[in-house]
Image 1 (cartoon, rainbow, N blue to C red):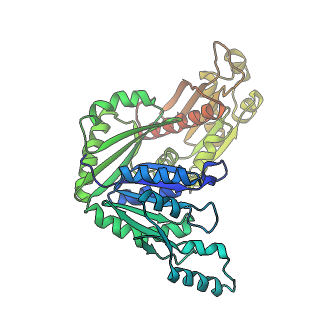
Image 2: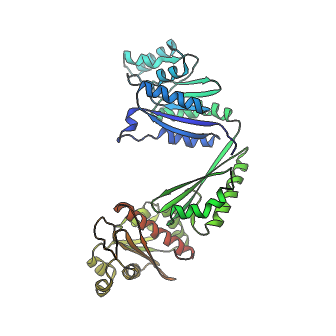
Length: 419
């Protein structure tokens, strides 16, 4: 891919490095910049430390065409963004009387006297263009040095977002020279990341534009495609050429290219076909039901759900034969199938799902280890059972089991081959 405008983002604030505050500004900015044809090469969170901040600014300005920093423009002693940026640029700072007067007027409007510490927010780096802040007390600043752009924006999202949209984005679009970047995410369920990589690497490695990034998570793999073009149509054409090749390498395995997650896809199929569903969950403890009911309109297809955690509940609620459990054990292919068929019969639905397994950390044996799960799908076309052994902690095992159940539902509803 030809190199276009490259950006680096700095999120300033020691609180962002602790466990209590999530940093979201740079994620939002990344999306907006991609829409403007600018790729983000790095996102860095920096503590309120003058030396660290100055070093971060120097590094970013040495690599990127565009640097945007959010936060650290407040009135307190630990708000050091202006001073660090000025030091990195080798410029001085002056106190702007017009900004100072505007701050005093703003405070007076709310019947408050401005504290002396707020005067710091009128400090402007030499050569900066001030970006007025109608929603707060911290103006932004735009600077340029050696053909590189630097923007200092306030940290609160309610101030940062409109300032970026109204005063930064038009400048960025102009500098980007009309480049268009488009992205697409292809999602695959119940397939190992290494297997996906082996299948698609021969395809995506023949493309320099788009680029492909593979991201693995519990029960799911995502292929992120990023294409650049001189127009939206050209960028979309490039992405579609690669996506078509990947579809050919992974027939029937891609469940989404439009941003939907697997529960949304399954819910859509059930609604389209006017089919009803009932669930009997053991080791997942209602997780599958919870994920499906996160989708609006789930009442149109989900008739009922049982958490049949004990052997007794499997027998009483969905009619599993006690002798069957005695003979093969609750965690078995036969019991999973009986749960799916039983819950479908009890609820009078078109489709039934049964899940049984050992989520851990205890309860495993050499024959039935922790992570062993059986998922069954019962419908008009018959019964399918999937055996899997999932690695990881208890929550990961439960999530992957629910994900397999959703993929089995998707494939069954589409008439695709069993997993």
